[in-house]
Image 1 (cartoon, rainbow over the protein chains, first blue to last red):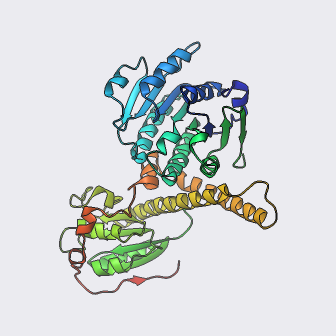
Image 2 (image 1 turned 60 degrees about the vertical axis):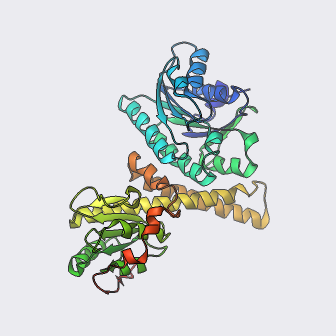
Image 3 (image 1 turned 180 degrees about the vertical axis):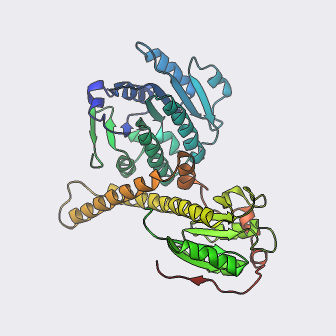
Length: 201
Length: 214
């Protein structure tokens, strides 16, 4: 279960990775964390974009599962008025930025880009987890999300980072999964332990 | 992406000034000119990448005219020629750039707006092609295999084109170019206000002209 270090290393050259994992309890969040930690080479900062679940949940999970020196984390929390501000203020560690409208992917993209640029200015290598694309697709159509994934991916490529986009395969039809596979450099099936490149990599 | 010629509409009440700008822009793209609000709206079609409107074009406020341009449902980038950086009477979603009335500034801005327009268009094409690819099996043969190979080649070409366009845009504007306004085809209250009475305050009946060297 999950993407182990060896399997993740198979997609080390990828900038954008579609991470397929069931959204059951903490398994999808855990899969994102494992994917980020499994990324070999230097990773100085983690950015978690929390659409499904809260920033507090993410930061708590990250602290709980960290071994050794934890990486600095910035959460970009897409609240959508479904979660209370108190849940963020109770977060155990890490910085939290807020985007209130889950349909406004332009603002979300710019906010993530700001965080990534600040990290790049200090020469930090950034890993990003979008948790999750499935949650995002409850608010916007496939085409809008597709354009967001491509554009954010190019922003991350510019700073030589890595982005993992979580999708729950049980929540989407095969063509939707395939469409998002095409826009990413590689795909990881967390449950099947299968990973690989495409897009001519 | 950037080497492709673009189609721009330059609209201003003063024909000599408008023509001078059009001449400057013809090195890089195809240009239509319009000297009235009517001519501007008539010149719009799906081929137009960029519209440059002088803020002095309408007799009244500029906002209704810009809303009318958006209401035409052709996805293009809109620049406004003005003395100041903001166009207070217009909705921010209706203006992609405010440009000084300076030839080199206009050329630079039009190039940038055209890159944004092409990035939007190519992203839409990329999604449509990815959707098509998603219906095709890797195990296909015969005609379907040929179709698969064709789609893959088109996807590769689009990725190269998109990457080239992305490199010319900064992170701040690229999300705006890709995703904003969220749905320009949606009618808004403001757009509804932009009826023909508001937009028909043309100073002249000069027909737009087009240099068809695209």
